[in-house]
Length: 213
Ligand code: SF4
Image 1 (cartoon, rainbow, N blue to C red):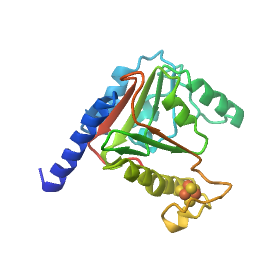
Image 2: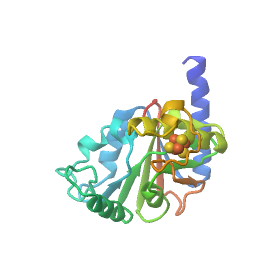
Image 3: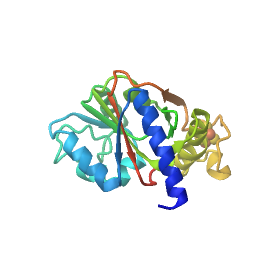
Image 4: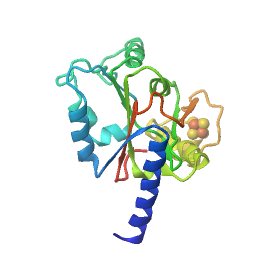
């Protein structure tokens, strides 16, 4: 192991310890393939499954395997041809799903999860409702402190999301958040989960790879 990898490993282990101290259920996996195997084993085929928009879930292959053919009760808001009202109805149903999956925008070494959304559907599901909540997180999203994690969520994750959705917001050009007042602003709701209640109801799946944003 080189020095940088060893340093990163120390940060990961400390993050895991603090998340556990904060009552999260933590699973540490080697790579994205292990994540998909873990999810397949954990989630029964008849479960009601909701999800938040997530590049990390895309990258682990979640949407390929967790499709309607295999999971008939999947609340699939990515399905083609849905109206805005139908999408909204699925997002509301996701608040009482058996399993809700997404990623975080950042994770602090002190054991906090940080989410920034436009509509807040992911924030709502992660704070109350679904029986099991699962976040899949690449090690690149770990920051040392909560302020640094919030800064990552604002200045890295939110900016990349703006680039992804090809918005005209200033961060897409400047490469950092300027706390804009744009009508198209993607960052309207910030949620920090610093303790998990009920205990262990949120599984934090940390992966020893860099992916998602
Ligand atoms: S608040 Fe505005 S400038 Fe900042 S990241 Fe969000 S959309 Fe971009």
